[in-house]
Length: 454
Image (tube, rainbow, N blue to C red):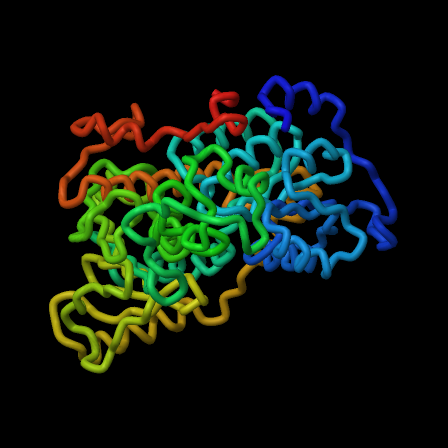
């Protein structure tokens, strides 16, 4: 296979242009269509391509390293070109205008970078990347090319309710934020404590396709303990529960409070942290004041069905759900969850037990968010790509990359469990743990070299 370097892609980009086709494989197309190539066509890729198609895109090409998943996806788009290797698909880049990157976390950045290098708009599934440096690369490339780039945190529109409720002033100034999820456990299992030493090419994989699946990251045997589904808990391929669900559940906090990178992180867990994320953990992060939040605020992330202590003054029968985002303020507390669109409500007033005053606060909050309408996340991307307006996306690159970086910095805390680490956002370095800085770097492996973009 040809090693596609930055120089190679600069050369091929020069010939890229938009073809105003009226038909595609027998399908009638609108005059101003958005032809979409999908990398990672099975699983979440199938959902994403379907939603983007509903929003007005036309699926023009499919790619998946897993032959079984590719065949399943292709049934929905008869006649569409299919590819095992995204690099081969990109050699036919004149046939599409945008790319949906729906691969596992560890190949989001390399596929997205190559797509933008070709002048393609990109919809990159959450989290945006697997490392801090990859996010830096993505931001730089989007700025250079001016393409539309959106992260696939599809519940982002529901953050509007949190913002409206906070702006009522009912809970005062935010002093602490707590967020949690039921994963791993309910939807994906914790990874074993060491990588498999043997494997076999089955479940739609071959030696060649497994090499592509590995991309720029460390090489381990092909195993059902890793792919196609169980990759999320491995350090080399996934981003753990914080990358899987904080990117949804914590989204309103980062957008509303204007947080970028944390200044202090501490990973709390009892399990050995070597090859895989711990099954049960907490991550504490401190964020400096921002123009939107005038004080230093503590953010706590909890996974595997852990929930926070119940605030004082909550109704005796109130219980937390499997996922949640709780804002604690100087005057009260409210809780909700973006995942699934559970509208936030005031659950406690500061300084006293549940009483009529608390009920009044809750009713006022309910009234404030009643009847809110939410934009369509997928249509937002399609419309922005058609119009060539990158800033039209709420979860655009300039927001999505720093948000993802903050969570990835927090995840590094788990590699040094129960130790407080200080991070300097200006230099993008841990100041008291030099060895932690190695985990900020983008990986590179053989033909899949991220270094071609530095």
